[in-house]
Structures are given as C-alpha cells and as structure tokens.
Image 1 (tube, helix red, strand yellow):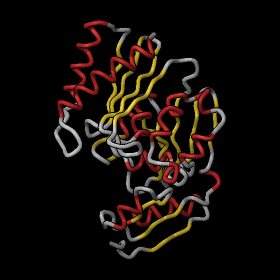
Image 2 (cartoon, helix red, strand yellow; image 1 turned 90 degrees about the horizontal axis):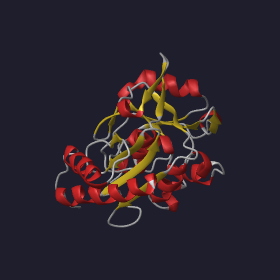
Image 3 (cartoon, helix red, strand yellow; image 1 turned 180 degrees about the vertical axis):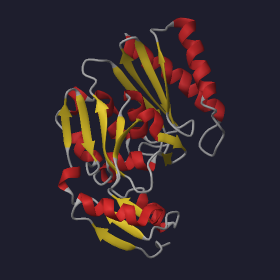
Amino acid sequence: MKPAAFDYVRAESLDEVLEGLSNEGGNARVLAGGQSLMAMLNMRLARPKVLIDIMRLKELNRVEERAGVVTIGAGVRQATLLAWPELTRTLPLLALALPWIGHVQTRSRGTICGSLAHADPSAEMPLALIALGGEVHLRSKRQRRRVPARDFFVGMMATDRAEDELIEAVSFPGHRGGGCAFREVARRHGDFAIVACAAVATPNGVRFAVGGVADVPMARDWPCLDGTALDDALNGFAYELDARDDVHATARYRRDLVRIIGRDLIGEVLQ
C-alpha cells in the first residue's frame, strides 16, 4: 500500500515545528527516523495531514552529560548514541540494550526519542527509560514540562504527550559504577522482544524492569533478596504483569521467562 496524501514540512527552526503542532494538533505527525512511522503510513494506520521533518535541526541533535545526567535530543539516532565514546561509562544499560534494537540498518536511521514516542511495550528504549528512572522533555508553544518515565507511558503505544507537544529530548540519570544487566528473548535477533528484562543496582537493592508482557514496561524496586524470597517476589511480579497468549508465546512461557531471566539478572547485578 501507499500512504494517504499529506503535506510535508521540512522544518528550519524549532519554532516552526511548535507552530505546526499548535496549528494542526492531531492532524500532524513528527518525522524523525521514521522507522516505525513510515510503515504505519504505508499501511494507513496513520493518516496525518501534515508531516513535520525535524532532522535538520542542529539543536535537537545533541548528547550532553551534565551533573551526572545524560540528555539526548530528539534528533539523535540510535547508531549515534551507540557510537558515543562515553556511553559505556555513563549509561552502561543503554550500551547493553542498544545492539538489540532492530538491525544495523534501522539503527542508522531510527532515533532514541522516536522509539519512546512510538511506545511499543516490547521496545528496548522504553524499558531502559523505566529501569533507569529517566524523564521525557516535552515542549509546545504553551509550555515546557518534564514527565517521569513512570508517568509517560499510559497504555499500549500511548503516552502522556499532548497533540501539540514535541518530545524535545530525554534524560537518563548516569549509572556509573552501579551494576546493571539486560537480556531479551525474541524469535530472531532484531525482532521485538517476547520478553525483555533489565536489572539495575540501587542504593537499597535492585530495580527489576520487564517489557514485552504488559501494555507498558513495568519495574519493581526490591531490597537485596535471594533464595525463596527472590523467587516469591519474581513470581508475584510475573503474575502482576497480566501476560496473555498470542501468536508469539503463551502467557505461561512469558511468566516463566520473567522468573528465570529475573533470577539470573538480579544475581548478576548483586553479586
């Protein structure tokens, strides 16, 4: 199929983007990497009247570390972040997760913020944002605001972003020196995950996050558990996620993966 007709705007300034979103609201879509959006356009799952291309705006193509927080602009491609020399030092969890996103070809075009905007519950970047407790920076003509990861994802492919808002950037707290681990199971490398898990050491124990099961990625903070206490916590969390059978896996298989992978990752982080 081919997309329905739309107007294309190659934005030359951030003000032009915000003006377009203000005027068109839900009839406008932002084009960054386009790896998900173009497929949706071709299948006519998205039918915007206006497509606003932001990829020539230099102010959105930045990766900055300041006061222990890494801020990634809306124009930063996944491959660019993966090649950033400070990534492993400052955000080791993202260094582990990024190679699992799609393939080399899609990472060369797809953006970090675009993945968050799409909000697929099986995607790696929403899971990493939840696991690290990051924030999404939203901007419109009216205001700027920051939304914590736990409040940003509100449902299957749904976020707290208003129709006139642009995801200007995302920020991750640096995780230097703290243990972290990531693992996912998919039918093939590069496919969306059947289950993806991340574990991050915290001052009081560990945060364990799961994607690919519930409508949004979810996390739990636990003290340093082991033995049957850890098994009970993982079992309870696996059932809270309300896994369902689909063409890729059964609910039981997903719950089993959460238990098995969770025990391995948490043991790795807390050792």
